[in-house]
Image (spheres, rainbow, N blue to C red):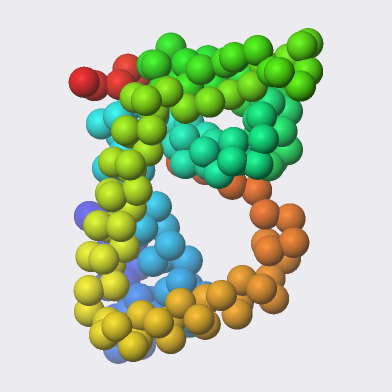
Amino acid sequence: MTHDYVYNELMTRSTGTTITSILAKNSGFLLAMLGGESRRKFAEAIERFGISWQGLHVISFLPALTALGPVSQKRLADFTGVDPRNLVATIDALEEQGLVQRKPNPTDRRGYQLELTDKGADIQKKLRAIRSDIEASMFASLTEAERTTFHKLLEKLWEHSDLSQGFHMFSAAHHVDSSKKLKE
């Protein structure tokens, strides 16, 4: 028996109400739990690629940054909020897997620019499809109108949050083991 199960049993016996039913009345709790579930499903799905959570974000956002000009490790670190020394290991792992390459930076001969390889671009497309499938499955019980309304409400919450002011893609939470190699 898990601690949660025992606690729920005690709550049910003493109050006639489960802790889950109490917490389910809290919108923040529900949002956090659904966000965690979404992240768990996505992390589980990407595990087969042997990419860390940070590596996932590099692959996901590098093309958009590249469209704005050469991307140095410093620029990528600034965007993601990751200490450049920590980002080096992530980029090294992605480069070793053939997903990212360092090239001489034409605007700064002292540094390198980062680019996705063709293999990295292919993985990025697969990851986008996985992300879409997970989202579709999580929102399958909502009508199109409900999904649209829900998204608009999330955007409103986002715009009025501290997150929108200093958004960084990476967090120290859940990481997939980046030492795993990409499976062909």
